[in-house]
Image 1 (cartoon, helix red, strand yellow):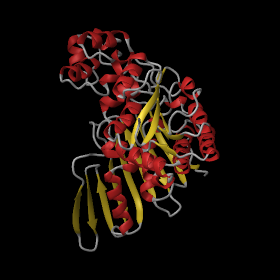
Image 2 (image 1 turned 135 degrees about the vertical axis):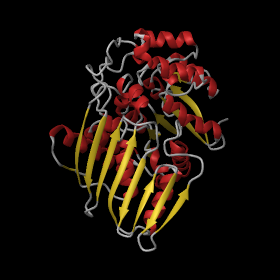
Image 3 (image 1 turned 180 degrees about the horizontal axis):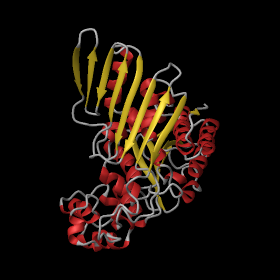
Image 4 (image 1 turned 90 degrees about the vertical axis):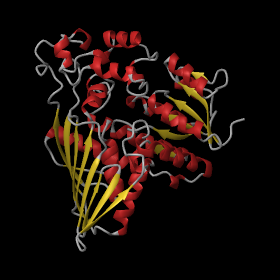
Amino acid sequence: MPSGITLAVVGAGDRGTGYARWALAHPERASVVAVAEPRKVRRDRFAAVHALEAGAAVDDWRALAARGRVADAVLVCTLDREHLEPVLAFAALGYHVLLEKPMALTEDECRRIVDAVEQAGVILAVGHVLRYTPYTRALKRVLGSGRIGDVVSVQHLEPVGFWHQAHSFVRGNWRREDEATSMLMAKSCHDLDWLQYVLGHPPARVSSFGRLSHFRPGNEPTGAAGRCLDCDRAVEASCPYSAKRDYGDRLAQGRHGWPLSVLIDEFTPQALETALREGPYGRCVYACDNDVVDHQVVAMEFASGATATFTMTAFTEQADRQTRIFGTRGELRGDGRQLRVYDFLTRTEEVIGLGGGTMDTAGGHGGGDAGLMDAFVGAVATGNPGLVKSGPRESLTSHLTVLAAERARRAGTVETIQS
């Protein structure tokens, strides 16, 4: 018999599988009893890992919902554009809901989700995992202590990483706004939500600038082919975005997790060659159908008069997010690994180390994934939604900030954020 609370998973991709893995590590607190996943290989693998009973793995969330409430809570980890309907259906059935970010892609859909969970009286936790990291807790403690005085301004950088941009936002599922969503919503809603959380309130006004500058036709090296496998050897060898080299090196090194797991289910050279020959991930980054931005800046003004800038850029090494917070009595610098707090009065600096995990650890977000699951499971088990740091109203506000920033970027305006 299952112990702790029971979970159903809708979408057994990397995010759904990652969250569910927490239950395997904490069997006394939670267990997975059902999954809905359209891809048979993923569905069967997930069912085997969680030892699901016969018939507990289905190919469509609607088939799972038709069975009524078979678990205490559901993890909705479908593609971004497919969040609304399952959340409405499962909330109406009485399921508590953990919803992968973004909660939805339009203001109307976000508000419908908030209304649905509030009317149903169920707990909702949105996957803003950066709220749940030890790093964030430490940073919040410093700000709350008053050590740097009143916050006047903030600089926050998300270094996406050149290969991550190429994988997810040039070749991958989030490359086009009409098929997915904006870059700001898909990747950086984490960051605008995080800034709101650490400062304790949302911005009042935003403006934004950004565009697709590099990953477009006309910037390809002379002699480049449409696919990396067909590229002239010398050209391919000199290109930092070679799919052949990037994915091939990961396979050779036995790095079989994300992002390689997105391309292939069997980790063999033959499977990888077929994927690069026939699938989207083997395309030249200058010959794709992508249209999302590869760099963007968001400027924010808060009711207190404080200001903040957020920069997202593809053109970096893979690195942790970096933040500088400027106060009236000191300055705080953080990089996901440690905090540096400089005191204006004593003119001294304290370094606060955080141990092993970093803010952007692959698959775990520096402990944020585990922190979210710990909070959500605890909230469901005790009936205390206050354990969740990314509830419906908080998440609605940060999504409204993202939507306002995108309107500002497109129209060249300064947008007021309506609650």
